[in-house]
Image (cartoon, rainbow, N blue to C red; front, top):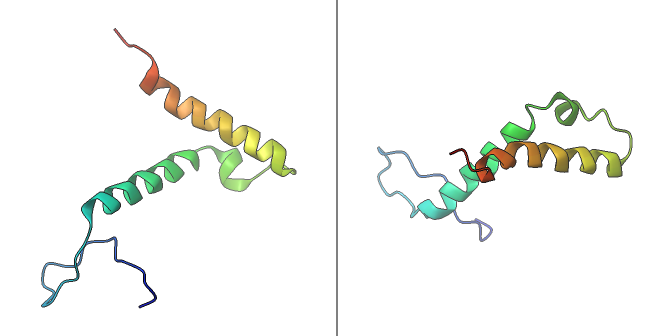
Length: 75
């Protein structure tokens, strides 16, 4: 092992399970969920943009579109 700590919890039938930090596991899942939601945009998943600048611009727009509803007061 090269100094990498396991993030995914071991199986329940393992005899000597390594320790697992569930906070890191939760953070890892949140990042994976974010990438999966961003890949719902076809333009990001297939990378239609030719330049890195325009790709990053659309990536920012997609992120704002995903995160904006969480900040808007829905009352």
